Amino acid sequence: MKKPVNFTIFASGNGSNAENIIRYFADPSRGGATPLVVSNRREAGVLDRASRLGVKARHLPSSSFRNPEELLPLLRSHDTDVIVLAGFLLMIPDWLIKEYEGRIVNIHPSLLPKFGGKGMYGAHVHEAVKAAGETETGITIHHVTTLCDEGAPIFQARVDLSPSDTPADIERKVHALEAKHYPRILEETFISSRS
Ligand code: GRF
Image (tube, protein in one colour):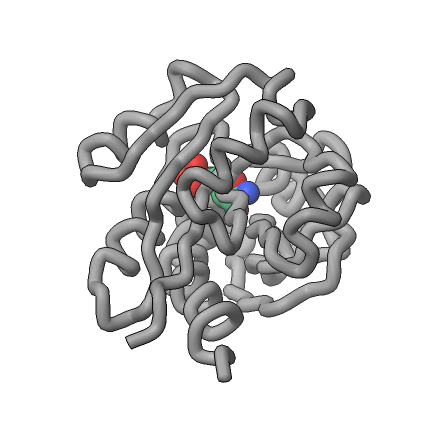
């Protein structure tokens, strides 16, 4: 049996995506594992969720995410193959993108390139979708580059919106898509495709 693909998750917030990924890969037959969750916010809900699920959860100050001498040994000590961003609000530095080339992914809660870029995260995205009167929205899972929300897309899924949907309704619809697809797309991209 092949060694599992290790997904280290970077997250800054609530952590529903992180929890879904941890639960999905808790089944060893899927060939993946989540050895570590790291957050730049000490109070982030994601750290509690990870600990509750038996995954090592670490807080690192934002400056440590910019320092290769601090971050790389931690990633290597958990045998990290892929870095998964799940609501992570810091930009990824160039040296980390080079070190993990093609192996850093993000999920964005809109149909990029629409509603992406600086300042477009969380509720801001759903409010902008509402204000623009969109009839659909969705999710984009994409490779990460140094440019915000601009890496090559791996997968998109869409959902219809009705004129009465509030930003909170839109967020709920988007979270449902995230739960349905993010873990599965990680599996397809990094595990099923292994020769
Ligand atoms: C998600 O909507 C994700 O698309 C975006 O940030 C949000 C994180 O939510 N990148 P959660 O912390 O996983 O609940």
